[in-house]
Structure formats: C-alpha cells, structure tokens
Amino acid sequence: QVQLVESGGALVQAGGSLRLSCAASGRTFSSYAMGWFRQAPGKEREFVAAINWYGSTTYYAASVKGRFTISRDNAKNTVYLQMNSLKPEDTAVYYCSADSDYTDYVVRPGRHDYWGQGTQVTVSS
Image (cartoon, rainbow, N blue to C red; front, side, top):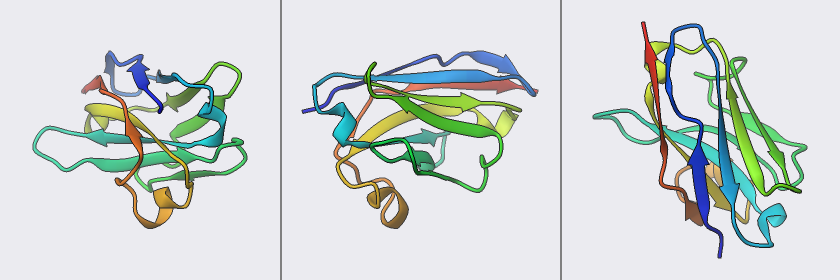
C-alpha cells in the first residue's frame, strides 16, 4: 500500500516557476515508477511526466517537455515536478501517481495503482 500527498501548488504569474512535491508513505516507494497528471476545469485528466523506479528514465508530454522536470529522491520517499516558464494553460489540479510498472505510463497512461489527492496550480496571465 502506498499513500501519496502532493504539495507545492500555488498562484504564480506566467513565466514563473513552481516545484511540486509528492510524499509517499510505505517502505516500497523505491520499487514504484511515479508519474504526474493534471486536470483543468472541464477537461479530462492528462499525463504530464513519469519517472522509473531508479530515476534513470523519464517521459514527458509534448506540452511540457523542455519546461518541466520530474525527479525523485528515494531516500526521502518523494517525487518532484519542477515547472518552469509556466503558462496560463498549465493551470490545473496536479496529481501524482505510483505504478509498479513504468511502461504503463507510456502505453496506458491514467490507469495506475495509487493516486494522491491533488494540488492546485494557477498561472495568471
């Protein structure tokens, strides 16, 4: 069992930066791939980024590639999402997820083992 708690969401101006954190409980955190998703009002949840259990492989949505960076610290049971050059269209609730199989983030994003409750990111123009 893995419990996930996101933090770091805030109101920020366009062009600014934020770093989201997702703290995981459980001693098996390092065995899970982790991912970030987001859901804007009136839209479906969409994939943002994923990282494998070791942190050696990452995968990004085209809309955030080059602006966002996913990373993890297994000693702290935490995954991060560094968001730079934020745009108003990045406004959404951001969720982290955990999956025992990293390839699920590539072949079937959205169907994962565990989810957090989300943190709000608002980017003003």
